[in-house]
Length: 337
Image (spheres, one colour):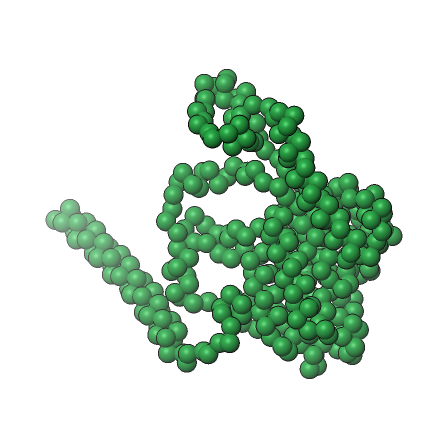
């Protein structure tokens, strides 16, 4: 009898657990259906531009007041068009979000200025250049538009490169900036591979096709000169933008552009920034550049759509997840800490 009671109690708890799980699943299904229905029930928007030219993002009043509209856009962390997230769900990274925000601000004729908040040690060369160009496009779309950059902990290399599009740069008293230069690095694990018995077999069309292969040998003189030429070319572009954006003689930029980093005081003396201050200073300077007493600042947030959530789901691939942990060989505007 006692055994039968225990068995009945066990079955009862199993049934309760199953019913509870079913209710939870039903709840999430209902929520998803409601959200999908709300999405489809919204009136169709008529756009004068594509969704990549004028991204749909929510506007949130951040601070300030008045009739003059300004947008604050953060640029944090590694500058690269690579989303973040788990192995299953991929989210927009700071770089892509910043680019979308700049494009939205450009398409909104009411936006008079952008306050770019930089806290980045740099990253990809092309990603940095695309953001720089987007800010220049914003300014050139209307003569009265302005860009003010305010630096956080770090605004170095690619982070500083992007800020060169600004009309005015403010750094916090504790900011580290500079690092004007180009970096290229790789791992050479050939010696380790030989010790543990790992050997790569490569079939290639030419002697330079597997250049910088981690299992390859040392570079030849010709290969070193080839790579150095590319590095120098990209470095010259960086220096020319510093000279143009900061109105500094090329000789002075050459002296500063050896990869050195500077604190805010030194950067101000060298002409790499315009002022040492805080957010309030950036707000006041933006109003001054626009010839206004005050400005109303907004920030953007991505709209949540249940369809976008499901589209962002990724099939987990353990091999790719492992390989993505290894650094890729590429040229960077990056302060390597």
